[in-house]
Length: 95
Image (cartoon, rainbow, N blue to C red; front, side):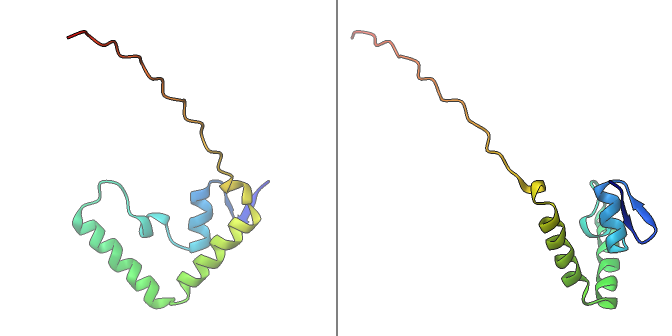
């Protein structure tokens, strides 16, 4: 099944998020190893985008809720069974 946002095909979850948001995901989440200066610039850009579109957070929440509703299997979590601990018998030494 192919997913399109507008005329662009979303191949990966990252593509889907970027096309749906209209901005790279890294703008909101950051990247590993970014400097303090890079982080400050990224956060400034994000603030500017939020100032231009104050409804964006609500739109994102609606989009996330829709994805969860349409794909409940994404969140099927199966607990892993922990192996039982084995107790080793301790030998006592006579005093």
